[in-house]
Length: 453
Image: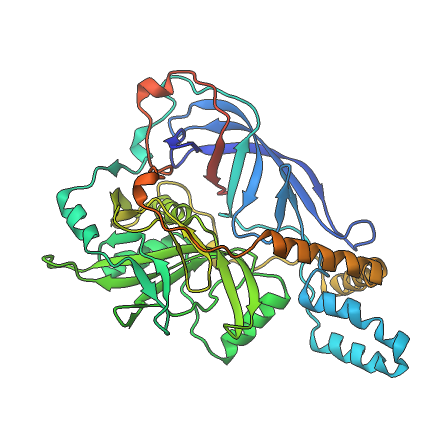
């Protein structure tokens, strides 16, 4: 739990709450979408101290569902590529009575219908936001589970000063920025990410292309979605890792290279980490590409947080690279902003400090109801969609909305600035002193936690 740059509750604290309301789709007669509202009222520190809070959900990370006013809003099953096309094709018989077979054939080729109910596996990352001010009692924090953000040494300063700034694409176009360094063996790196629930990407093949297409059409996640290859000094990455939930658009991901610093007997592992926020069809790239979140420091913190939850982090250092620009563009034109600090993570043998969710990322996806129930629901929801949306009025509204959205998000060039204009964003691992925790200062800031049960 963080407030600005301060950690208020360390790893291992629990947040307790209730399900305030829920709305199921069921057969789809009353509702097209599901909804879930959670409220949290108490935090319990690792030392057993109880802290009354009022908090609501602000975001479910890497989820296809959105959150409005603390309520998780489920997806509409017909809000897919094939659902939109099918709604347009339904008009064909009006103009051409022989087009019925086309519509039937289309639905036969794409019999994919996303699950509209809300289901999250144990271990899903949820960001909460407090709704009222609250105070922490004296010495509510136990420092022993807070990863230490220690001051960089001359040795680390020298290491970071040698780091390459960017990696490149196959066509030698500047891509992501180097923002993480892992110190440890290759097996320690692999163990850390596996323990934190991250997955490797599948190689590009006919099978992975089909799984990609299915995830796109089904509006669902692909845990080992292929990643574009980037290069450092002409070498492709040695490892790649990603973490997703139930969205094709969104994932946390990074690439890692083995790199030998000058004057050091052992190599280190350097990484470029970013978070995907959306997938679009790009004519220039001849396929689907992902856009990324502009604040890459948030992803740097997310990676360190996940490895710390898994008990794989010995210490964390943040080392400045003030001679590099803090705003640049990647290979697809997305702007990246950074405070230009590199996170240097000393790894250790993993020893989780909190209970790990049973089943982990391997647990099976949940599908409520049997095949007959899902078939009936599909027909009802398709009929509702055709009635309400397969018309020129809704089509005009949807086209106007898409045009306005596109105009509001122009692809602006990135300004080139220096890192001295920005303060470091070390929000995940800065601990408070006992004097600060006992100040009874009212707090009303976002807090971050991971759900376990």
